[in-house]
Length: 578
Ligand code: ADP
Image 1: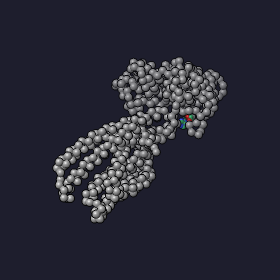
Image 2: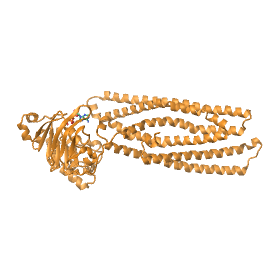
Image 3: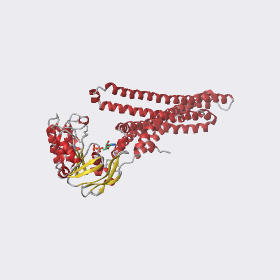
Image 4: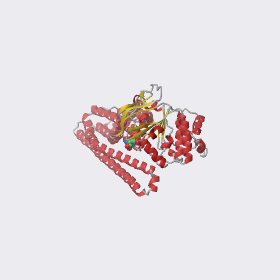
């Protein structure tokens, strides 16, 4: 049987806390039985005159004192229950969210090809919230009610098995209705969860693309697809609620038929002289009191089924193999070598039998038509993906054997699409080296030619950038990313030259920043304008995932080939991009 830990994807601490929560909730339920027992005793005492006896007031006072004590015990149990279930469930949800964030960090990039960000966000926020809810409001009361009802059931059976049977005879059927409808309920839940995901995706796309939507007059079209997704979500939610509540209502109806059966059997036994009025009245009190928790179980079970759909996705996420490797292998030099490397994202090969060396401390440029595999080569060096065959080594060590985070410690990436966080400029640059002092961060910013535009911002380096720094220009963003790389001071630099046309001033500043960044490093630059790489130590020309040519600029322009053709075209037109 799946353990609670596995079922809800909990940490060790979370599983332990959940068990404590269940125990605390059971104690609260049992403490309620105490007050019911005292009430029953008072009831017996009050009814004594009916059978010719007399009320014993000393016993009555004692029972009232016991009633007060049971109220105090109940209060203490509730307090303990609150602490154990509510406080610990939020801690467990926090653990789950942190664990997913850590997992995501270690996933191979192929996972992000298959899953989009909305799905992962839903996993991290929505599914964790479902687990949070079930750990506080579903699992502990469900288990505790189950335990206390079973105990009461045993006691009643021992007290009078005939009355016991009449109280519980409808129970199996009502549970069968709920359990038997599980598949239908799960299907409805899954459809609702999918509709929720679709609606989140549409919302995200709508908000992300609001500028394009407005400029291209797509308001109606895009709005209608969002509207459609939201309507579908409404329908699936109603369908799910309706499906669930029909089964719950039928099960509750069947259970409550037990009250009539108990009255019928009790009166029959009373008139037959098999029992006296007192056990009959007691049975009626118990049946009314006990059906409350059982009705709660019948309502909570479908909610649990709904949560299990969310946890199923968390389990799937947790079962994705993460990229592992050693983090203690010293890398002696920074020569990068591709040895007969072949790679495909899906089925279509992107790189085939690539064998090249990127020498240490030199500048190697990668050129080739768009889609020839240049970015793929640099991603493979950083182990964003693993090669399908052959190997890539850094300083003679196969990158496949290295922990990706350890490997990244040796590399700096300067991408075209710079990701900026909703934080200050200072902290956005500090991402390159979290231990850097403010002075070091500012020095890197100055070296990357950021100072001049940062000084114009209202709070200088402490200016908040807003979501993804949308207020900065492409050139400014790129300079921030160079400042990060300067601060990191990694020995290997993987550079993707900007394709977007930059104004001459920005271009000069970026070139200046880049020359400071790459001095003395092993550099692989993906070049889109050949004139920027004429001085590179080595140029690799890629064509359809194959190395077509390799050499210095002078060597390559001298022989007839792809590079010479590209160079001639580019020198004729300054505007082209490869
Ligand atoms: P380049 O940098 O030379 O323009 P890329 O390395 O980006 O080329 O892409 C090479 C091929 O791989 C292209 O056909 C591209 O469509 C494909 N490709 C790139 N990234 C992915 C990805 N994440 N998933 C699937 N295919 C991809």
